[in-house]
Length: 351
Image (tube, rainbow, N blue to C red; front, side, top):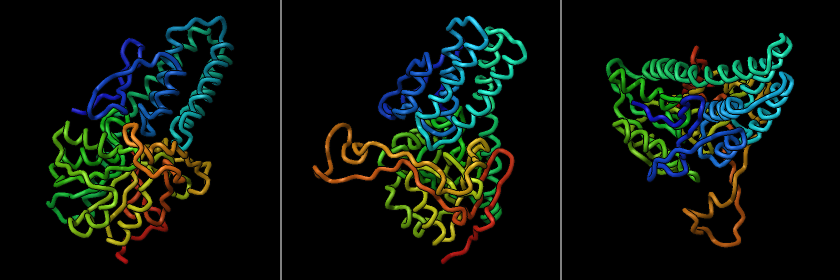
């Protein structure tokens, strides 16, 4: 039973406030696009697939409870609101991908002579399908990823894996991407243990992934970010599983800060490194990782804990939310809902 972070009932949207987890489980009403932008930007909802779903459903919720005089008004509103939602968190490409598909979809309906009411209904259904499809996609990623992990270990042995950030039910509609692979391994009876990093500075691992592991009874252990190299040496990790906020055409990948160093360490220890992501996170318009925009966040995420200053006053800070993992380090492969691709430049050999 996976956690439900996004609730869509009677065309009303509520989301689980992930800033309060794991100590408090509270849902927030999202009634319009401005609400959707705010919960995404504040990271009350996060994870590339969830950002797109919540963004689109916030538009659907607004449209469902509004009145419009013409088809042109609806189409103009849809275009304007989608452009605004893309600005909430620029690194994750899924919201931008959805906007590029939904905007011409609405425009075509107007050109076909559909009424304002018909366009509103069609756009809402389109957004609802995004939620439904994500669950199916995640299960497929889980199955393909589990098979790929198991191909690297001996027959019958259970896998020991390491994951970073949060890529489960809290980052998607349900099930998860990288954590979906962990679930699939467990369902197949082939998961020995999953280790999750704390994922500083926002602690998505200790607050969210650990919360999911405990809630679902998965055999898990939390480690400090700085313990990953020692873990690989001491515990015999079989695979590193991470998600992706954007994958460039050459398979360079943007993911939560700290992913790059895990890939470097995994390469040194001969541990297959997997990026688990829906195909909507692949951005063919960007040739490589250097072209991916990297969001920088508030210095307070580093200097303060629960509102209390812990860093020396006056110190400068650099707080990128993401880093780029070069394709040659993705030695296990990029796992999508339809295929597993090992980048041509990637080789799995211990240094």
